[in-house]
Image (cartoon, rainbow, N blue to C red; front, top):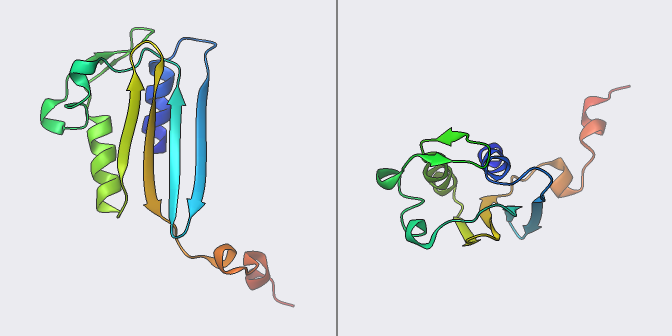
Length: 121
């Protein structure tokens, strides 16, 4: 998911412009966002963008082409893993895509030291 969002951000952002990735944890969920300062999404595409049946070919700032299925697949993958996927976009100013996923409970989350379990002596 993150790779697809970063790929899109690079594809639709002019060279030298900013792309920002943020991640946070609240309770049992991680929230990740990828923001770009690209061309944004035209209003007529906002409601169909995440629907696989409505995917259309897109062209990035450097002429890269895509079939438009990546975001629909990201949304479905996030949903299947118990999260949510959404976005904000303003034409000519850029877009921010967000997703949440459940945080896995590991040693670090419980306060343990993962290296201590691997070391015996």
